[in-house]
Length: 178
Image (cartoon, rainbow, N blue to C red):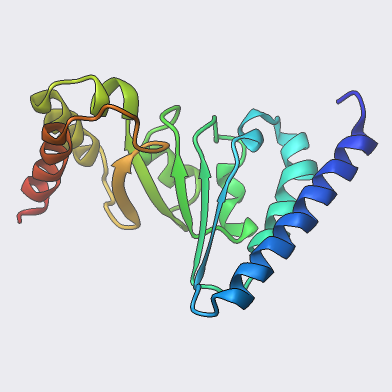
């Protein structure tokens, strides 16, 4: 890191802004019972950088009295994943660089994971039959199916056909016995 003091100042400023923004939202809408933060930058940090420039600031942000503490990071997450629960996160939407079983292991299954069907290459570009099979394979790879919200990794890409979404839902219902 070329300018750690400047980076520290920037991260502090962003964190303070976000804390104020979260407080304003909660004051304006007192029924809000969650925080949803999106950040991919932590996915590009090494371990020491994450522990210095990421972890303490996210811990501050998630230190709120709400039920849902949701982090989206669809950049690489193997460095940050073991620290998510200690950071205060209880729901995590990841990218596709890691499988759900790997993330369960990295997080010691302490948080709910949301994902992890490849959004572009499977959900958007594959046939409905391929989406269904990939979804079944994703579920079958899970030895422990607790704390999983099945979804695509990262977010819904543009151009997804309705039949592919239905194939995803059909696969989930089929595997769950519905």
